[in-house]
Length: 252
Image 1 (cartoon, rainbow, N blue to C red):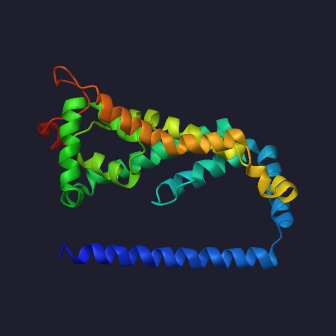
Image 2: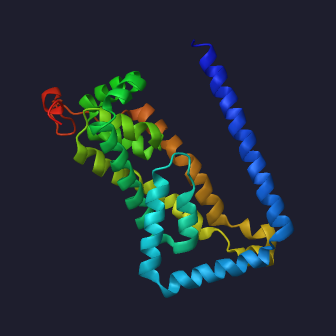
């Protein structure tokens, strides 16, 4: 059975890749034949004008959309789009708060409704997480966030682990800020469609933009290198408030 699972996963990935290529090719054909860049630039200007005229309503609508998208796996790149539309400070608030709330929702569902299924599916990772939480406490979860570990695994497994809800909340909120800030900055450095229409692809030749993209790629690698080199700070006594005991967990 173990030999068939990788084959099935590879086939599924190939099918998804083929579907994505077809959709992108279809979208490119429609844009190339029926929509001009000037028309898209005009729509962008109207959208930006609407955000400027109704900042609070636009902020709340954007926040609601982001929270919904944050619950869907595989919808990366949202911070770039929000930085491009809303600017750095509004976007960083939307992205950081939205991702934290979405993580808390998945965490709560895992802890109170799907704990047994999560324990069966991620047995090894859950065992390792509980072991590290007992040793390093909140620093372990904070490191996972800063290293950009997959949300689709960390959030549900954390719910099934012995980590306290408050610890999960604040480590998520703080640990995601560095990556969110970099991605949002990439968004504000991207050219507008009007600039792209007038200057072409040369509008992407921006030093800060290239630097931010490199930082996006390097940050998780630097965090992982730092952890492998120096380790994660551990509790000297092993007595910290990052985890709950088994007797307490049974009452949840």
